[in-house]
Image 1 (cartoon, one colour):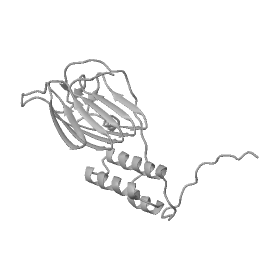
Image 2: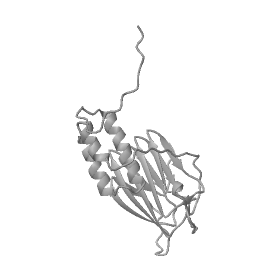
Image 3: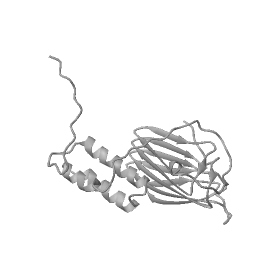
Image 4: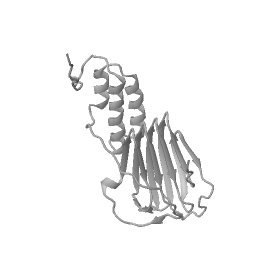
Length: 206
């Protein structure tokens, strides 16, 4: 007799049934998406990640995401070009251009594109390349927030910007950073959980 495979039934809120690794992964995606949308601060995200990983039941998970909507997202990719310098081009940038998310996949932002004043990339078990060498900067000071959960993120900056790094699990290898105090500033705020975030001024192809 053939047994038809049925989708896993949704668990009621507050269930005392044991949660699986898949359930915890799904809640982590919701947390990362909420951070990217500005619903959680970096400190709140870091705290909730630890609590989700320690959660044992559906009730435990529900308490950690009850104040968040269930969302998902994706971002397109593109080829990697070679380009020299960043330009500051004032102008408004829509919400759709402020963040991207990769879920068990790879994404790239390369070539000539407009980088808004605040930009967020959330990568879950994947890879991400943010190539800023031809990007048009919307502000003299640009803040790039990056969350890498079991992921690797490369950020390539042009030589005429000042790079400021902060966060957890973020490394840098920049040899030609601008010394001029009037140069555009790119601030990278990163959180790497069992992953890496690297800011560099050269893209090394495998």
